[in-house]
Image (cartoon, rainbow, N blue to C red; front, side, top):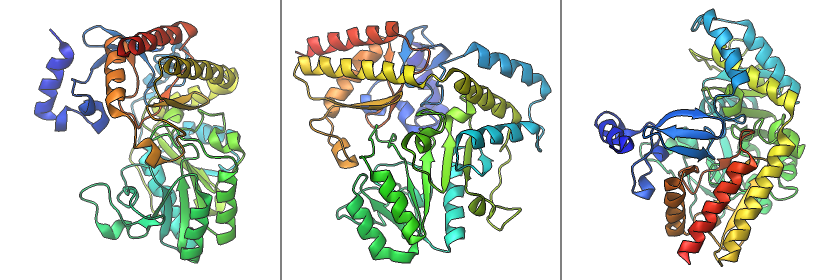
Length: 426
């Protein structure tokens, strides 16, 4: 019996479309989603007992792979301390000190339960600090399911007030300005047009929620300069890139320092968490010191923080970034070579241990290029690899990841399967 099919059938009776996050339904592929029973190292195992090489890594949160023994040992020692005291604990201090140690801008930190909450808090802080209402975000970036950030691209170079979800009141997004990524001239025009009414610019320094799109040389520096000139708060959404590009995330990787940084994923070691950190003068507007209200029942959960502390300390001790970069570069270049060998058009963007495969010709510089992918080829490729035991992120608009548990063995096996797929397509 196919347990994946059976469980999906049961799940649809109780959960909306059988899932708790849309992409997990595998709807674009027309196949049943998989249900995972266990995970270990670079592998996940479904309810049928089938093993997959996992290039999703918990949506990037598991830089040391699944069930890392050292991290698990720390957690097991702490489980006897109680489930959750609901009040302050010393791990909050240890955790915040680690964040500050590796992120220069993290003069003060506030913990949340998700990256979405961190972004929401950062924007509220920016508006309170500047006494302005308008915000700039970039086409294709996802910063959580917050009403005023659920906007998409439309015609024109200064597009705003276009919602991308039903149920979003247009009043919530009237102050959201949507711009194309990597176009500094358009950004300059937006600042000139709206002048002293822009509270903040929020940006993924490396776009990773519509596939990986890298910033062009000097782009982030120009944004920093414009924000300084106009007195606008610069927010880096590093929920994905934080502690994955480097110990200091994209902030240290590119040596561009925002006013506020939003974190998530890796800092929780696979558990739900978020954090907003940044300049003291802005952060101290938060209640109870200031009048910007934010609260969370499970914010600063000691067990989750122990997982995050363990991961950050392990990253600082082992410094795996060069090894991960080398593996990712090898993997992506080999995939590109195979596609070119069989005369298929593909563009692979990667940085550090993050990568995306775009079935598209030419350079992928913006979200509109990404949206013109060859979905038919992507679907065939995805289903073939899944059947053969390789799990990529189930969307052409999501990033993929390597962990320290991936080795040349898993990568070369994946490359063999890519070769087989392309050979069959010819």
